[in-house]
Image (cartoon, rainbow, N blue to C red; front, side, top):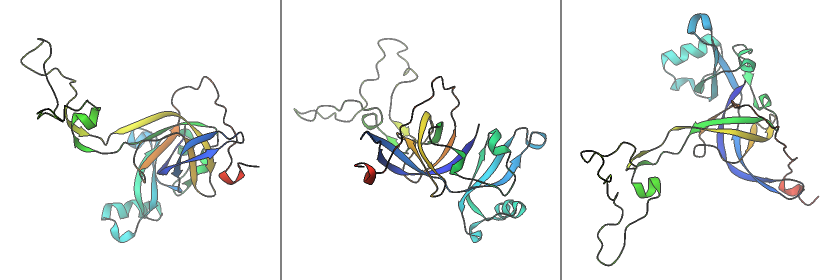
Length: 227
């Protein structure tokens, strides 16, 4: 098991030599600096605490300054805990890069979906809108809450109603890495991942067992398509 923190930058497409187009998500993976290690004796579990992206020291409070002073690393904007044997073997001050994952590996991507605030059922659950003409004054309402005579004194739990929509943690499983580029600091994964652009995501080894090894075609850039 291994994991790393990155930032979703957006989506694009890449082409295989046979001309097949693959939609991919570009994930920027800057060096993850290990700030602290959690131990079973002291914390009850094993993990490493990593910092992502630099932050000006004047923007830190005293507890945060103490964390980075103890680790003797530059202040970071985000702190996350990562688990896995390969990352736990590192020491404080070491860095994790995109080289941790290789092209063709199958991973899980964890992030938070987009926040839409308080929304109605038309937008939230794609319910049908009411009539717009012929004197109707009921357009975007929730509709009937009747329950066919069962428990007439209440609304049955689980009824799709208006409410807060996102952001919630979402995990997309079994995503294939199309390209891992440690030199330029990015990873391309096939398909979409949770969250808006610039959202922080976690990449980890796929939890589910892979019964069949995926076959990843060698992909080329657009300018190489005609070669």
